Length: 157
Image (tube, rainbow, N blue to C red; front, side, top):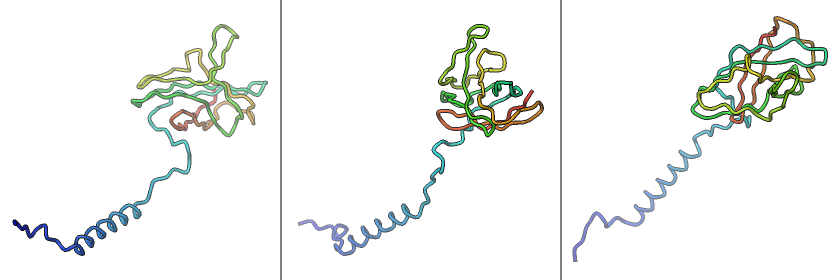
């Protein structure tokens, strides 16, 4: 009968090599630190906001925010809302006719497209503003998107 010495490896040696490979694999797996975010929403970097302007506080405690946003990613994104330390609520509004507004739940923005809220009939109304806002201030905001957050600064004028 034909005998191949390469296949005649003692079982102890094979078991040792096998266990050594598993041990090395486990060391590699458990020594790598996982990257875990402490926030469920990540910071979104694939969009750009320009010309962000906020109106001074009106007598009813509201203010109007407008800006130009450009989606620079290959994915569609959706604007859900806005947060800041100076207001409690915000509404995305579309003006249908003079004095007739409709509130939207969100605004979709296609890949590599822009939305100019400075000249269109779409705006964000801040309600329950917590303090008076005066001209020439700079206010920090965070735009809430389905895919994360986008911080920006608006100028009051």
